[in-house]
Amino acid sequence: MTDTTPAAAAGSVGAEMAPVFQLQRVYLKDASLEMPHAPHIFLEAEAPSVDIQLEVSNTPVIDNVHEVVVRVTATAKVKDKVLFLVEGKQGGIFEIRNLADEQMGPVLGVVCPGIIYPYLRANIADLISRTGLPAIHLAEINFEAFYSQKMAAMSQPGAAGSVATQPAGASNGAASP
Image: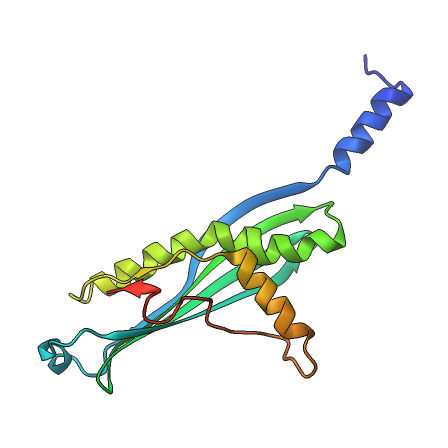
């Protein structure tokens, strides 16, 4: 026998309205590596300079399901020659329901990237180490600060819809070859 009292009915409605946040899948969406000056670049003794670019994007897939993608582009140069150019996109599919509208931006721009970024870091390090070069270890990213910078940039007059930027400290010091 089922309990159909008003308290039981209210409990089931409350459960249906409870916030839901679930990671459905993490996947490597895209990866590319270029070494345009190999094998001659291996003869260089000078330490490379490394430039890191980071971008976070999200797209609704279906109702209450979002894809979040973190893209990293790392370019290492010795003098004026490119040692390597590596780009990776790590995706995640998240089910997010019953959150207030003002919470969706921070969840999609801070929480979700924070979950999938470690996978991207590992994939980039692995890809570079397979070249015979020392692995690049991407720095930890404070996605809350990154999100705040992105929101501030978008609130400026004439701001573009997508902001790809270099996070604080992500120049030569963000990665260690």
